[in-house]
Image (cartoon, rainbow, N blue to C red; front, side, top):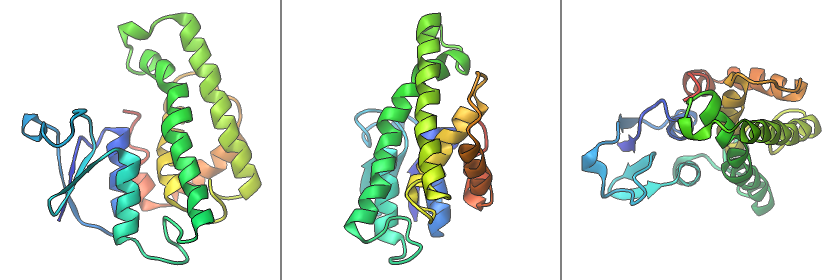
Length: 202
């Protein structure tokens, strides 16, 4: 039985939970506590424990689960073709670096109400950057007509779907990105997104 450590309100934990549901994998989930301190030197979640194998970093966990337990060939969350897989991982890495960096200050200010993130200029700059990055995704979805890496749902859509949910739920001015809106509706057809992708903005 897989063990996933971290609260299910965490956006990064929810990536892993959604991936497990897509793969039909049973798991036990535990909140982080002091007994887990030796599992991740960063003291961050999620952490995966799979028969003694310990792994952290949410996108890496999702890749591992898809490779170790996912089906191969058509419909795989991670395609076997090196080029197709690279396209999926490109969007996953973009989510973890460029997109996350763009929204961080605005989210901390507008949702977390962090006292350390109340510089109005930086909030506005973060909002502008966040909207610009979602615009990049909108253009990609216009090109593919369906999902981030092409016509089929992949692991890229798990990580990006949670980020889109966060953008949609944050109280700020947003451009009318119709391809992102259609994508959000398309993801909502999936049980995993309904259960783990739209359950708040934490």
